[in-house]
Image (cartoon, rainbow, N blue to C red; front, side, top):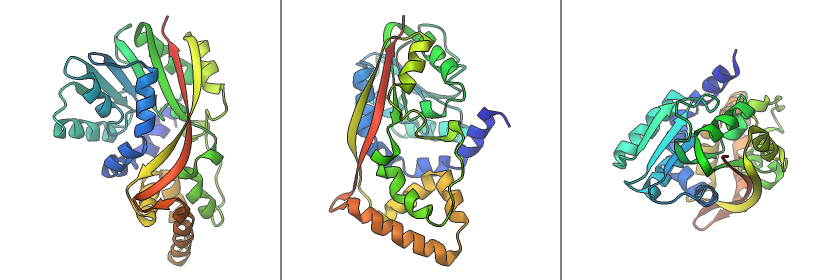
Length: 278
């Protein structure tokens, strides 16, 4: 199986759930979206490309920012994600946002087309990172910036480990292929060096600590996280009903450490990696 097909197969099953939870997901990762906007120097009237947009974020948030004089194109290799993004744009009556099925390493746009390129949690899954970043720089206008957000170390992100540590007591974790590893670029400097090799000027990296805030209960957070992650869904599917009930109880207890009167608040850390087109 080609890496591209593996990515399509894995994320297709998650697409309906990312659409289902879109409002909570947008709120959880709003600080990352804001950081990308700032680092890419996005303003009213800009033409922006959002790579690995999923069901339309952060493209839709950015479309509201750039206004009718600007435009946003969101791409994703998963047709179901793109369909969901188009529905959301229609629902929000955002005429300056469009969505296409495409891979980052073969962008269907002319050179120097965009004022900014962003990707929120997409770069980790690029099958060919160097090719993808060369394409990113190709479609950028000279002197403009690409900005990518990737997860920091696993231990700084209980969004992942609060559940996985409980589940892995009962299900031995399987090796994760590089193109399926959310922490592929958690090592400082790793993605920045690839961006430099791709030809970016002044590549930079910033650690962004933030809080993931979700207006849901611990039990609803469990459900959302299981549905969002095919890997977690595959793991819990191996459990007997009785064992699953026990695992869920333990996981919800672990999540209560992050529960507040307004929902869930979890510390998080990402890296914002940016570079300028020559």
